[in-house]
Length: 115
Image 1: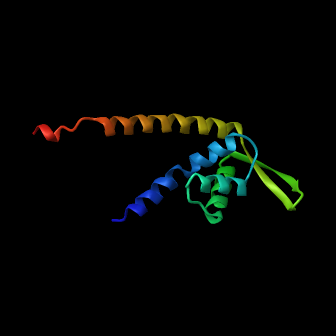
Image 2: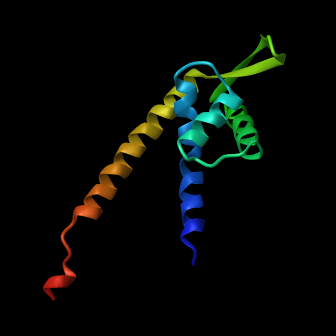
């Protein structure tokens, strides 16, 4: 078993959460999301990001507007819908619970040493 496979699965599992967190700060262009995710060592490619954005949009969590660009065609800027804001709030609560759970597990004294 390769640790890299598990690491990739862990990152995939939190990618949606990370994308929603980025968009929650305000209008954002997809390539800016890619840059931020890459800088944060969340390895993502366009072929992963765009279908995920479409799925989130179709689920009613995101909306977008087209804006003219001085350097090419119009750009699609994403924002959270009210439903997306509620969804992200729930994910934040879940993340805090997971952090707490991991902390409990990591700091629990070993019981096998006494046996």
